[in-house]
Image (tube, rainbow over all chains, first blue to last red; front, side, top):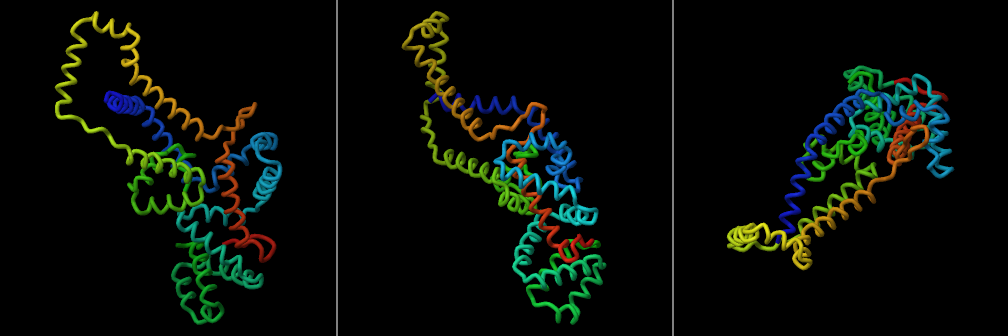
Length: 168
Length: 162
């Protein structure tokens, strides 16, 4: 009979003792979350980019060799990106999570298209995304747009152009 | 969204598990949890704890519980000698320490669960520190970077600016 009472009492007292530490941790977490929200590139990539090659090698040395090599190659490719490529990544990074997820889904469908259609769609998105909202809307409703693409392609262009639009 | 565990804000994860989040936050967490193995695992562990608590049946408290308890306290505090004696006698000591042993067992269990579930950080001599979930996050972030690049970069051999 005593055991449950003592258990509950000790859990409550432990919780009370943990309150100040918890508050401080929450405040630090909020501060960090605010800082993260303002960052334009994924913070974890920035952390890796901020390391010297030697530090990076040491930080990743626990990984299996093949995985480590692949990750290092991908990080180098990320380092080599030009300003325009980075800008596209930043735009994606600034989207709300639900919209980021939507772009990922569109990308899966986009990947299944033949290469020539992929190229056409890329050009189209590149043309539409810089348009103003009104112009974009009018273009989506135009015969020209509807005549060039099937329903699935129209939907993909629509979602991508809206997600990466210069003006929303 | 960033990982609540990585950001040291597990309250968000707990609120999500308890269904206390507003619609927008819940949507964000749904998306995050679908990608983040660590949060997924933490939610599964939390569900296990709640299930165990739901299944736990507390013994019913008798009507005269308070009266009996106060009577016992009264008896035990009647003499200092009585208390000392009960602590010194091995058989009584066993009963005295029973709750403590139980508590120690529970504490050891919590500690074991905590140690088993917390991934050991990779700490290196010069202070460079990468935990396994950070590496996973970096790989997920690179997946996104490459996706965006492929969406816009291949047509002319370099990125189209949007």
